[in-house]
Image (tube, rainbow, N blue to C red):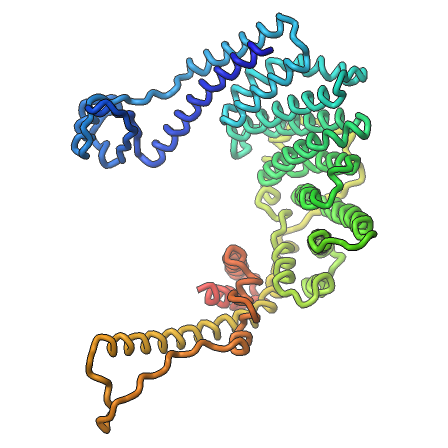
Length: 553
């Protein structure tokens, strides 16, 4: 194994050099600059850069003209080396040499776990270099039968010593292969236009679940030691689910994320307080996938289940005082987030009749918190059920999913919620009207603050000009009676009470409108108001676009 490790390190160093050269070439194509290795007449070597304007009219391999250009820049160049990019033949040669090295090691009857661990290290290094095709095709896929052999031994409880090592290597192998195939797929088809893209990513999710199933079938001690396997599997599944959701196939990730969520409940280290944000991230992605898949009832159930888990965990953590403030804050934030998310789904399923009741529910969760109230209504307005993929393109989506059989293990009884354009726009108009009603006082205060700032700026500039005149002139300023006029005092800034009256909370330099509506949300909400006015649905939000546009300016 030592010979294999040395040989693999040498080959990976060669791969790293070609990867760096490829990255440099890509950056040069974007910026138009090129780098050369120049040998000066004093014997020293240096790396020089020529910009796009210096390379005009000069060929890529014209060393004489390149040298003349460098000499014109003041460099006493004797020779110039033009870097060469790695050709496709180099990649093929690297793949063959890696295959020969691993095959030679395997024929010498090395230990199965040591061999698979070296395969994992090699594949993970190639993944870090961005060589996804090489990592999947020539490393993980080529030696996947060794991983199958290792799985057979694990299923027979032939774990060896230490017992967790074989399971961890098996999980690393599957996760590395899954990550390589995921990256290879989305780089080949970043817009999800090919039918096999969805097939492949669905198979990748199944492979992740198989890897997690092997870990969860072990004893409690091994599961706790290998908690990172479930964590990494869940993290990769979240990335794949988000990609599928953005491209209109979020319903395919609902069941895998549910199973991963249940798997995390069987591992004690993943139930710790510091893992609470990650668990919340998983459940939030699960709710969004169910929402984009028209399963609003399922999304609401996700919120209920997570709220129940967090409530039980909070009771256990706060049982023995003193409780750290960070722990209390983490539970409060998580409970608030999912209560507001559940309110969103209750609004769209009709359990909450209108936006005013949704606002009242949000005020019960977080009283006297205008930013949180605004974020709740904006979250409800960002309804993923209304993405363009889900309106008018169902036939195209069916074509992409053609040939994928229905999963017999899928949960039954899931209802799909459907909306017409009229229903969707009516609810969105209701939310926009509620948002405008809340934001109008803040916008008026922002306009008053702007006027106050402009008036203060005029006074300050006038005072500074007078001070500069006094500093430059020896003649004092005299009045009509011929007597010297005392300089005006520097304009004072408004006090805290005045600032609070125009929207600046005490102790804060940020306006209340900026806290409630950050720039990105402000711009997006302005666009939504304009769209509703253009569609003729602005009966309740008349003038909202002009109001938000004026406050944005």
